[in-house]
Length: 399
Image (cartoon, rainbow, N blue to C red; front, top):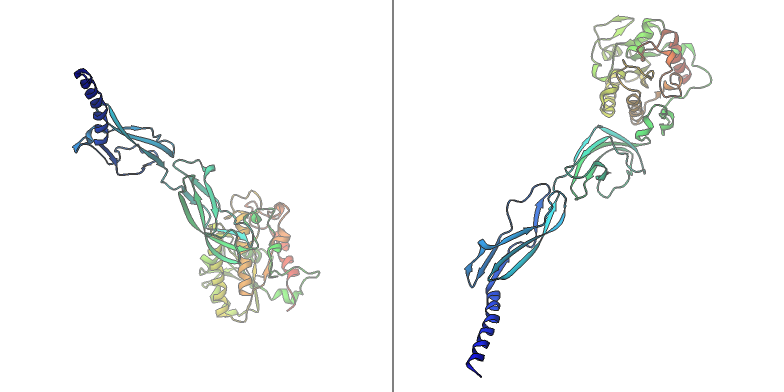
């Protein structure tokens, strides 16, 4: 072999072995197997990486090609490379853009109503998210693994909102599980008799109770009852009332015989020891937004009356309907319907009779019959007091 050939082979070997040795001696490593980014926050650093050639540190020669779109959650590529003498080594990492912020969930209602064995009624709510539109967010009701309520009574459950990235927010919700759903309280749909599954309501008969029995009935209540005593609808000696009487004002002085007394309802009942009373109060407080709390307080007032006069039979009267369009009523008709339903449930628990005055005062539209009311839309006209008192006459029994 000629000297020239040997030189050629040496150069050829060097041209092959040198790049190979450089490639084999070039080290490039990345600690992470993927790189996680937060949606909307472009990275200001890169994965920890190291590069060297035969032990000589080349970390500062690492470059990164970032194809990540930080404005859209998803999986992208992050490519790191180091080049020496034209020899290149690359590492490709999945670059994950994650939406890690849970939706904001606001629940408006303090308590919802739903039926046993039917899908949960969703409360009124608002949901927003940093990425997803509200319509893309999944909102569900119930405890985990529970698709429908299975037992009557008060249940503590959850409203849960999850975005498309799997971030979830939940809020606790109190649910009254029974025979009513939210839509049942809409004016025109509300029917207290249809919801009376335990026959608590006293239904009107064909003949009224005798005058002797009716005249012995005491009436405890708010301004409509007070007006019956003031303007001849009932004997003032049988009316114990005050304006805006409700559980929260139960300890204020009351009118009796049309005179404001320096006594509370409880103190007067203790003195009189009546055989039977009808209790009708709470319209002014029905708009509180928490019918369950109002009803619980209502029940405590009844317990107090029973404690001072154990033999007195207490009949709970429903809160009267209001005229459609009333701007002066303290509660909407839907709110009144909710409270009346809760009062019905309370009477079931306490084994108390209840009278639903709605039947003779409410029109087909679910509001009080317009002609029955004064201009304020919630006080009865004196000429229509019999629409209330006659209903009670027909509903009472002779016992």
